[in-house]
Length: 380
Picture 1 (cartoon, helix red, strand yellow):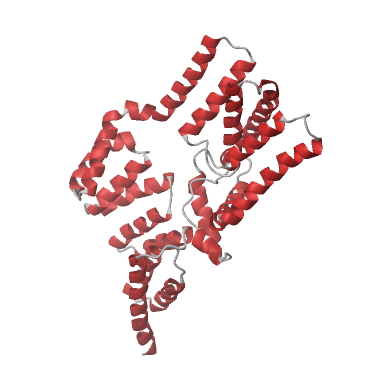
Picture 2 (tube, rainbow, N blue to C red):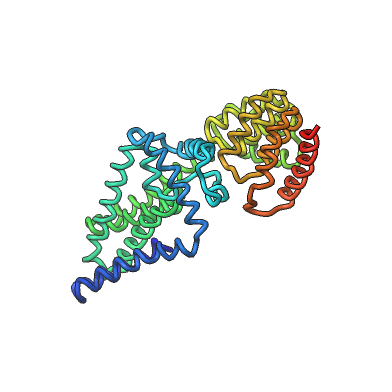
């Protein structure tokens, strides 16, 4: 919405240029563009506070990796570890605790490009913004052409939206932005209609192929993975495990497949193999859910120390979740580490609820009952 509103405002500003006073022109341009994001912040308070937490943690990543960046598509992995450290320090507000979550995007494509590519990312952003500015500056003499106006509207909308959310990872927006640029500059440069059409169609085919070539090449394997998912959901864990074993050479770097395979192995009582696949998945894309599952593998092997460490990592990655805390409480309780169990139990009882559910009520109730038992034991 902010992107579209900004695009309309800029196009109106360009169309009335010279027809009203310059002061009024700039008021019409600046005031709406500033006012809309400010109003949005007050309307979506929780969402805005959540973004501020993301920006705060992401800034720490940028400070440590400003030169080379963390690598393309590696932001989510770094973010969950930096958020883990942030909450482990204990210097956070209750609002931040409630709003913390697993994050895949900075919700600012330019900032994320800088984090992932470092100084090269900044250079790419500057070139990109220069191209957008040049496009907007050039449209002044083409406002009579409706197609040109629409393409510039698309370009401004997407470029501005990228400041507040993630758009350039979505295929549709990549195509819309690229096609709009090619159509606009094709007209400006006076390309022949046939050549112009071939370039635009070639771009669409190229982007579509880039995003789907693996599904085309591995069509049969994807079909088998879909069958394995269905079998797993129907609790045929052995059959799902057997299919996944055959698919592993083709999908050993695929996050969805590794997630499915690790669970099929775990429920098929192959905990050691499940842990190995899970560690491979964590190396690609870590999360509090995967750390909790890793802890369950360690618990099954009676590796209490590693289970404890994995649960602590899970809790600090997203501290408003109850299951990891409850697992840690039970670990301490079952191993007669009563002082630590009391500490975790009190944290569970005092933890504010983000989204009420029967599971959370059950966890709080059972924790309270066990805490009474712990208090009796401490009095002996």
